[in-house]
Image (cartoon, rainbow, N blue to C red; front, side, top):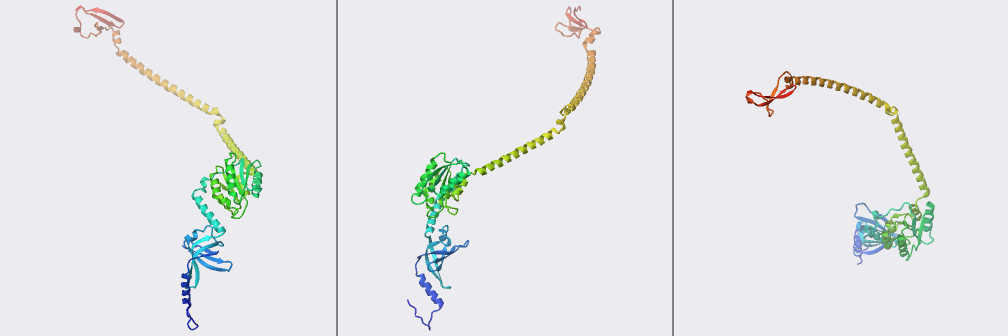
Amino acid sequence: MALNTSAETPLPVGEVSRLIGGWIDRLGAVWVEGQITQLSRRPGAGVVFLTLRDPSYDISVSVTCYRQVFDAVADVVSEGARVVVLAKPEWYAPRGQLSLRAAEIRPVGVGELLARLERLKKALASEGLFASERKKSLPFLPQLIGLVCGRASAAERDVLENARHRWPAVRFEVRNVAVQGVHAVPQVVQAVKELDAIDDVDVIIVARGGGSVEDLLPFSDEQLVRTVAECRTPVVSAIGHEPDNPLLDHVADLRASTPTDAAKKVVPDVGEEYERVRMLRDRARRCVRAVVDREERGLAHALARPSMEDPHRMIDERADHVAALLDRGRRTLGHLLDRADSELTHTHARVVALSPAATLKRGYAVLQKADGHVVRDPDEVGGDEVLRARVAEGEFTVRVDA
């Protein structure tokens, strides 16, 4: 409703600001398009501050949104990007300032395309297609290289010329395909499958020169990405230039910044390899020479020892020592034998002195009964009993009279 004011009854500035805020609060959410000129994301803050500018009218408006709203498009939205924002106008009465509270942000044009690719990238990454552990290593010297590229393109020329310059003997199996447009994806997929089926192909290079995001879109196609992920042959992605980053770069076993870089990474340089072989050969010679010199010094040191200069010296010293021990052993054994002989002689004399035979030699006799029992008592024998009498020189029989 209209306000009744005059020069005599004006409204205070604060009242006017309050009324403007009331009118703006009654407005619903609106979609606003503009270019982000300022972007402020403070670490730990839950709110993101933007400034949207309309280049046609050179008008800017402040926009605030919660962090989770901005994080949904943070990967593809930055300063300078054009966006469409669903926001509700807000009026800050103390400062008399208009701002927008954003509930959704959508990139437009290329930004929308990048957002879609980012969502596909996250989905494929969650399946493990970009995992580093599934990537295959390239052979050191591929004998046959599969090349997928445009017909008579600069990318084909760069790969072939640089590869043959680095290693003249390298061979290529080339598949010319469309690298942009509606036929690009099926042709590239078919070419990759054909090359992967050839047993002699050691590595596959998918190459294309630079271009816009739309031109490189076929190399971010989900079908192509999954085809490359299923290849048993290592695949090298050489799409565009250094800033370009299609999804094929993430699933490929090796990313090359340019087609020329792909040739350098896949094929070794014959000059560099020859130089490396020469260096290794020189290093091997130095190592062998060092080993031989060390062994020669060790051998000379061993030959300089007294035992090697006069090997019989030790034998002679040992021979003298053995002779001395032998002589000592003989003397010791002689003393032991002499002592034992003396002891044996004395023992023999005692035994002879105490022997019954010695007693018999003095004229004594030993009487034995028929059963060999020695007669010690006369009562042990009877009349007419035959006894055996043993003397020093023999024995004879006797008969008892009484």
